[in-house]
Image (tube, rainbow, N blue to C red; front, side):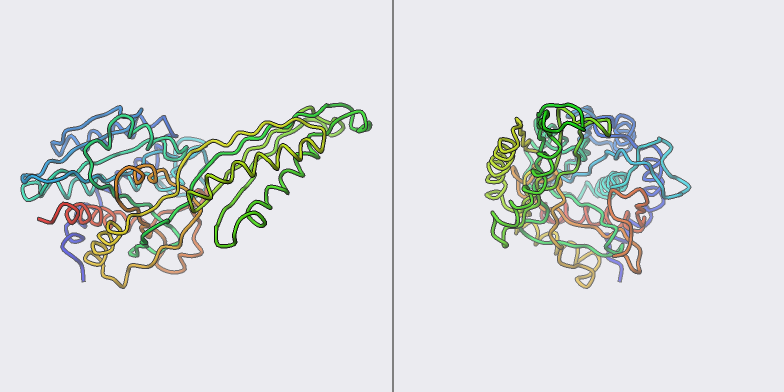
Length: 392
């Protein structure tokens, strides 16, 4: 049975899908979301909202003030795309080589615009204020911080957001209280040896051998230095050294990512990385420089806000369509908002109705979003905002 909130959203489906497809054709990378932000501002202006543009770069913030007094509740969507060459073959595939909305932020933007349209139509019955936050630069873990610094959270009592999930069928939602997504730290390691001829290794200090040992040793942090009940991942994603097959290079450079699910574990890992890298480098007569760059904390949903989201989901699509979210080490800078104000982040199914678990995942060049999730996402965000403000 279709709820009133979803019934109201369905007439907007064609319009919101058209917006999403336009954004999909014209994706913009982090910190380059100028055209996307302009489209968002134009759509919000049609609703007569007070709009701030250029927030934290290309961010857009708009307030919908209800007729009745009350607190301010924020809803957030991210807008940036990824440096990926699209391979979907869709008729509205990206027209920009090497750039793709492979994470569905085009849909997130359309969904939040839909929520704004639904709520603006009922502003005369609304208590308090709904703030719509359209954020740049989520993919590089920078957008939330600059939006907050520019005042996007000023006066906000609660915040809510969603992310589509192509391995969950459209029409389903996944929620949980507590940690739901991992922290993100960037790891950079520079190893300096002494280059020379590959045929005379005794006259060189080989940074590649040293780097190889470091890659292996870093895996022991999770397997041998942390409790099995304290999940953590240390991944080296790039290792660059040398150009020629017969030359031992002078330097090796590595980058990686550190993911944890507990702030205490997050705080402890940099010392372990530093110790292993420096001692192994010393053993191999190399010099090492280590940089652990803090990016995003663990995303922790507040219990009361998670319950509110679950009630909104149940009231919109029924409890049978809500499942428990499986925690993931993937990161999201929505976590930065949740460090400052209470709120909840949840997964919106965006996969095919059948065998969604086999769908291409986020950040894949063949990732495809089931657009049936767009009106549902708009209805859910609108319903959440109304409930958080005390109802009509």
